[in-house]
Amino acid sequence: MKKEEYMDLQGFFNTESCVNSDFHFHDEDFSDKKRMGDPIFKSIGYPSKIFYQNIQKYIRSYTKAGGVVLDTCAGSGSTGVAALLEGRKAILMDDSPLAVNMEYNIINYVDLKMLDKEYKSLVKKLEPIINGIYTTLLSDGSEGYSEVIIASNVYACPSCHEEIVLYKNETGKRSEYKCPHCGQIINIADKKIKELQTDKRRPVEVTIQPVGKKGKKETREITDDDKKLWASTLARYEQEYGDLWSPSEQIVYNRAYPRVGGWPGFAIDASVSDLFPKNNLIALKILNRYIEEEIQDYSVKSFMKFIFLETLFRTSSRLFTGSGIKNVYHIPPVGKEQNVLTVFKRKYKAISEAKAFLQNQLDQEKTRSDIRIIRGDAKKIDIPDCSVDYAFIDPPYGGMVPYAELNLFYSAWLHEKEDLENEIMIPMDYEKKEGYVELWGSYIEKAFGEVFRVLKPGAYFTVAFHSKFSNIWNELKEIMQVRLGFEFINIVENERGTTFHTNHINDTNPVSAFITYRKAEDGKPHSIGSNVKKSAFELLDPEFLQGGKTMRAVQSQIIKLVNEYNLAEVPDDKEIAAWLDRTCDKNGNKYFLK
View 1 (cartoon, rainbow, N blue to C red):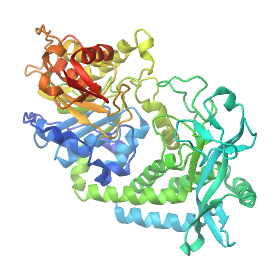
View 2: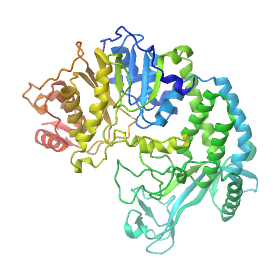
View 3: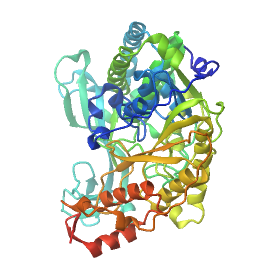
View 4: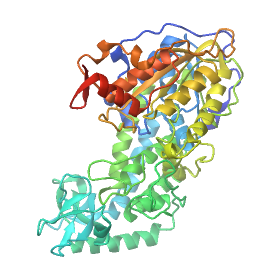
């Protein structure tokens, strides 16, 4: 099916209710520690995605077979995968063209034999062309091609004035490097040291694959002869392929993480294409042109382009020598530049295997009939009143992940633009700016007000949520239980190993929560005020602190109590820390009741 065929909602809804109420769990049920053993989860990258098997447990608990599940911030489509595996229908909605494209390609049926045939044809035709860009001679003079190049910034030592190539001269402390000649320690974040930079992203080491796969790979220092060969090869390829299309979309500057001077490592007015090494950009142009023009089957072409998009980050200049940071744009001072075709082959293997794994569990026709994928604004959805049996949504948490500006790195290659104006996003420094919590709240209230409208009477709604800010938690509680009139049902902690959100006081374990609400049987809002006079500290069971708890574990428990008892508000970090200091002894980062 084509993408637009998944948008038709006519005849999609059930007239009878498929609402269920059978939720029970053990604490370990919602850990996602097993996620990296799952081929679907580990093959696809998207900011802070939820392990779909956890969503399955909620869908199974709160709906009956055939029920309609809604996710209006659908991201990578985990809710859709979970719904299909549980025999439910799902409506996936997102305002990002990247997200919608990802949802479509993960779920849409693809003829895997045809896909593999097209892949083999692509490799056969493009391998000599693309690997030619990376032509490199091995030490014995035989022909090979580079698979990895390490590039490093270079500084003049303030003491001995010799060169400090940052690569392999790290001290182990952030931004600190040691001069290999005199032992002087420099910190490249210091303004005076920045002025001593003499070269940017100099190629210093290469790993070479022999042509024809004969012999072992070789890793060695880069020579002047290498640089001359690469320069002449690049000039030849730019003359032949330089006019091929690549995105001119400008990177949007850091609305969520304000920083003087723009994103680190590149110009503030850089385009998407500027974030790739020149040789990789040529290779990506060639690969992209082939996929768009040579592959005829719509589903295969779309899926191959999806794999291409998953290749982009790993072929950009955004990688460190070991890994990369996807939640910001950053070109590090020491980085790894990888051969485009090598990465594409690796991504094809992982993603096509994940696709086969999922398609083996699903019926092709049921998949086509039971999923709808819509690009749209969560704050205004075109779905009839009282038509949905359950909603599971992982919304933006208020500035934590600037999805639209991060996604445009990929969407630009789809010839589409991200909707920056309608994104539910506020800057991370909102605590210093009056009204930003309320602004975020107004977005969430509109989006979740739409969920309330379309849910059937008695239906449940689970929100996946995380924030280190007490005022965001309080705003969410006010919206859900007071302004919209949902009934609070339960809150379950979830130790997510896949979130960008780290905490900032004595514990970096990213605890998040699944909070479930219910629309009343009469279908009307029921705002309930708090009748409990005790504070969250008074309600905290002393046994909870037996064995020692971190500050964040205590905060998580307090958040649960505030929601369960509908207390006035979540105490802030300072209040929690002060209470812990009064009532507990501290050992390391854990608190023990006195």
